[in-house]
Amino acid sequence: MIVLLIVLIVAIAMGAEISTFTSAGILAACGVIAVALIVTSSRPAQSAGSGTDQLDGADGGGTIPGHVANLMILADACVQREEFDRAEQLYRRAVDNGHVPALGPLSEVLYELGRDDEAAYYRRKAQEAGA
Image 1 (tube, rainbow, N blue to C red):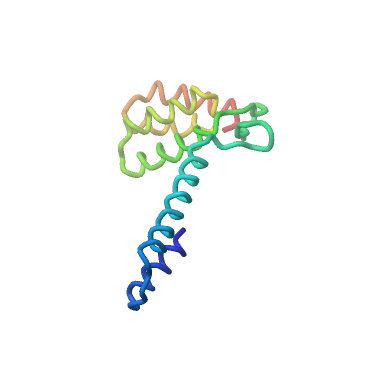
Image 2 (cartoon, rainbow, N blue to C red; image 1 turned 45 degrees about the horizontal axis):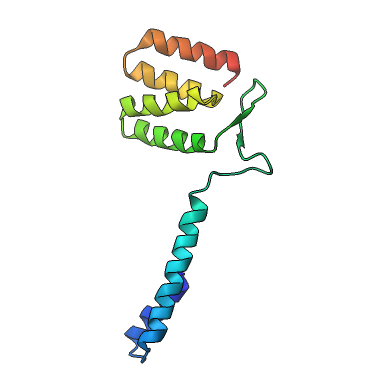
């Protein structure tokens, strides 16, 4: 798609005469490719046959929806921006979905928010789970 657009832009910049029909065709092809990319990227991530991602937890894992990885990425970004309330919400959603590795970061965020007792509870759960 990008290559098609670059070819069109370079051709126009060099003064090449391109028919309206040709340029419309190139733009239409780019539109079709863009829609296909959007549709395929909006589907949940699938592992071989299971449709879910595997947990790395010491408790044997289990399976979790692919969206949990996105929750973790967003939560980590919130921590970097010191948006601890939002990070807590995201880490909790990951924990609620059974994502054991989210227990440790959740406890750290709770410490940052001054909720030491709750943070200690999640720290213990993380240690027990081997996270």
